[in-house]
Amino acid sequence: MNTNLLEKFIKNECTAAEAEQVKAWLAEHPDAVEQYMAEAWQEEPAHPMPAAMEQSILANIPVRRTRHLRTWLSAAAAVLVLVAGSWFFLSQRTSTSASMITLTAGKFILPDKSEIWLKQNSRLQYDSLSFGKTTRSVTLLEGEAFFDIQQDASHPFLVNSNGVETKVLGTSFSVHMAQKVIITVATGKVGIRYQGHELGALTPGRQMLVAEDGKVERKDQPEWLAGIWKESSLQLTDTNYEELGTALELFYGIHLETASSKVRRQRYNIQLKRETSVEEVIQVLSLLNGITYEKKDANTYIIK
Image 1: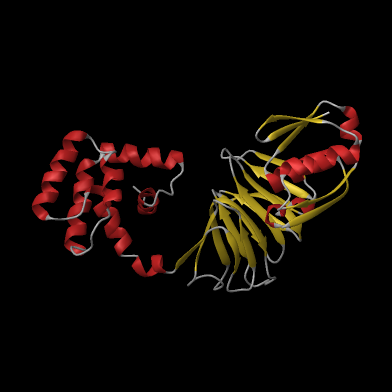
Image 2: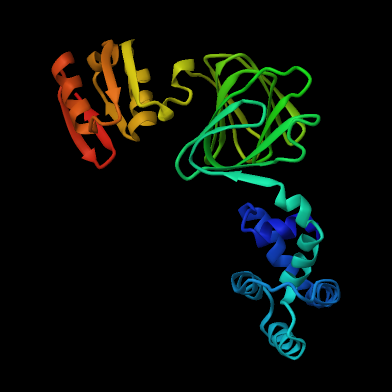
């Protein structure tokens, strides 16, 4: 079993497929689990083990073996099961782990002066010791981020996201981790790879969607839509219906539907502000453009 995968499992950072792989290994190798625990007790007897880790591992080990291990632990006053083994590996990497910086929602300036905006419920991580030595590498763990990268030809900037690597020298772009990894370029040019395979380059106004099975979809996407969720206001001028719908979805989280060819043909002008409610925006749109609307559900409006 790959020790890095075990560590990811302990930290709850595995994909669903990786978690199933670890669970299957736990069930099939109880003796190896016990061996890991013995090693951990010899090497790091003074390190306590969080109870949450214990429970997450015990839940995946056969009952008979679990009872045996609990008895062993009580006698030795040691740490638990695979957790002990994983804790052993983690304890050997304390200095490396201590250098990992994890960022959540907000705006951040990296050591190279590049700027990152993280959307709500997003997490990004990088190693403060290795960042900038040969490359500038970060990992988007979940959510969405917008990057404005300082140019440095000697140190490419890499964004890793669920097997997708986005490489730039200096540009601005967004990466969104959902059912697919979605990369949208605002300025400059980015190169994209998936699990070591080159997928090509993206330029402003283009978007790439990469599925877990490696299937790739390329779309046109106006560059001004990249990262608009981070803005406090947005002016839409002579905007078509599709762009209006995308802007409202990214800015407010709502979805527009229409069966009207008239609505689709029209051009729209409106300023979006965070402090303005969605209902007010839809009302202004209807007044300015001679259209009506119906609220389908909390996040969907039908435009007529």
